[in-house]
Image 1 (tube, rainbow, N blue to C red):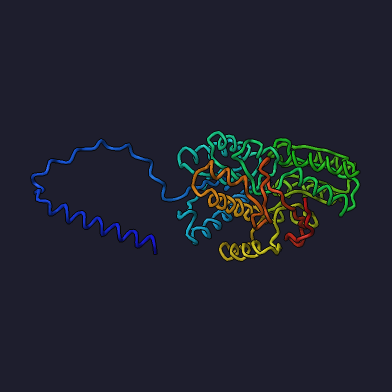
Image 2: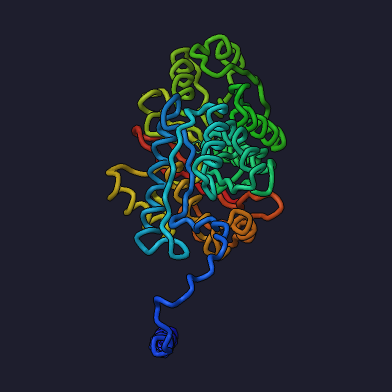
Length: 399
Ligand code: PHE
């Protein structure tokens, strides 16, 4: 009201001034041409919208990760825009496919920053990819937040790099504790991709923690990205007859290994990490993966209000159940939006500073407090069991 009245007073004064000037006698024709002011240097116009980049594997070997990430981020942005946007502006997403290849991630982040001039980047999914893109975001002082990259080194790249998920030292400890205490296993074997930061790092953490609890790692076998035949390594593992086989890779490779392990008569319980989370795991692994367990960030059975609302909105929009990747892309985007609101301006450094102060943010995947020293959230993990081709909630493990 006050503002409007002030505005009207101003208009009235301006009108009076014009009338008085008009009565002043000087005819317009006699007026000297107004002195030409030198043109002011054009200020960069405030962009009318907020551009956020998203980098995810929309194609390639783990394409379900990209599809879910896209869905989750788009749902978050739609909900924010429907409520009027952020600081009066609408968000626009610029989507980039990195094919789960680190060189592609680096190129995508570079393009988003220099060409699209995004204020922040959500992504990527795999740790090895985010590790390739993050130094570029950091060097350009652009905020980057991965929903899902769990390798510890990711946020160590610098103070502009964040994540919405827990880290692998925690995830490995959760897996080891579950194997030792819940499954009562005293022996385990690991089989992992040495070329993948996530796969290798998670196997190391599982081993360290399982041994600390008093368990024994009887085989520690590796392969390379793209390998399809795991029989040589599985033969060695079979000879040691471990109670648990820990598979820290993504769903596509885990499905293949599970099949070959069962064909060879390996009886060990199969256990792994968040990389298993895809509806395609059971398509590839079939009965071989049944009864397996994995640690994860999210279960569609979660009962916190944010998760209940998210599940309803997601299934309505996409006619499919969300997975952890969808939930974490949604959370990463919403954490970013929250940071923008608290920053009060669309400026990457101000947003970075606000994100360091994220406290008890009510996310779909649980409450998130970002540790400003490490930019890692502190949050619990969920254990899921593969049952009847679906993932059933098994347990929750707190940090
Ligand atoms: N944590 C995996 C990585 O860092 C990515 C991932 C997260 C995959 C969640 C599936 C589900 O590479």
